[in-house]
Image (cartoon, rainbow, N blue to C red):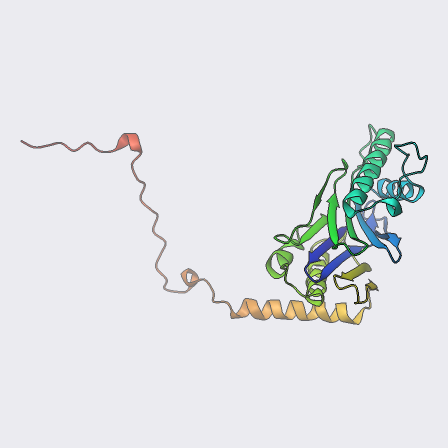
Length: 272
């Protein structure tokens, strides 16, 4: 299992992916899951993958070589040749679907899962940043301001902090902090997610520098964030009032009386 998060806020785009892979508790290793599909003056396009490594590797190889031509030009369809991020999402979805079907056929009858999912983000030219989640079947959704994050992999443990603390208006620095809290929470609850993490932060402002960073086990900031987050959670827990019904001398809970069913309403007898 793995964990990847993409954030698309007004200030920019952030994608973070862990590197832990496992095929059983005695076969754990690391593998880079954040990949650059294009990086030049015209476009910066990034993908993060979760699920079957064989499927995601096959998809990446197809994208690098280019998908078969659909017109008379004879030229393969590549990421660098797509005019918009929407077209890139269609191409990535097609490659993922082809890889899944091909590898799934070879694994038919086994218990090995051939599914994979992708986060795709970036920009082309001076167009706005875009973030997509691409499913194993090749279909996809785009991240929207009312829910400015997407997750793939082991998502349930890190979702609450994203729901509570992230908004479209969050500054880029705040967004990076929140997503790292999400990863810290996930690590504490699931050993299949672990350091190092790969991170890229792309500001909406073209004049700001793109941040690329690998967060290692000894990363000073992440160690401090994890420690402070735990301390502040415990302090907040202690400040919140205990349930009053648990206090000594509190009134015993009285079972509610059952109301008569509609067809059992007592009939009033009129005395004469």
